[in-house]
Length: 179
Image 1 (tube, rainbow, N blue to C red):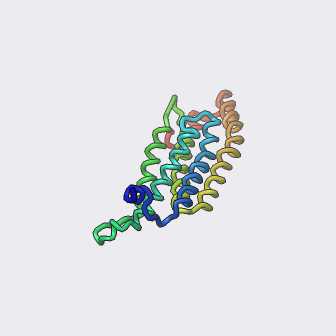
Image 2 (cartoon, rainbow, N blue to C red):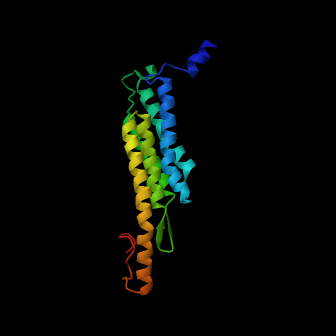
Image 3 (cartoon, one colour):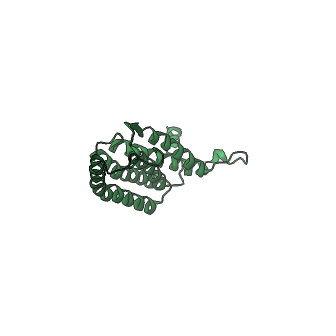
């Protein structure tokens, strides 16, 4: 039974209560962004953002712990926590790209894709113990999504009204990539 207990709770560089706090923090911070996306009925909402943040946090904690594992003391084995950052960034970017669609000449889901990518970064930040960086990122994202979200609908309706009157050039309102 001692071997099983030792296997379940190996010595940890980061104390288990801190690991629990980091995981809960990543869930809560991911939820802040996800809540806003959920409220706007976007494809990736509360649960998705929470899970992306949790996954990134878990990868970073495992990365930190792996660096200090006794099994990897050999000079031939090199563990680099930055590779975890790269892997999470690439993985979340792939997931986020899946939320972006082109429909009737308009791009949809790009903000949701960006918010998923940010949820990954927030999870990594919390997992590596950079709570302040994660909190500033969450606050900044929430401000961008809420404050600019309030301004954006009036801007879009103004643009649509101008287009309806025929005063807008044929490619106005399209991104540089769409022109």
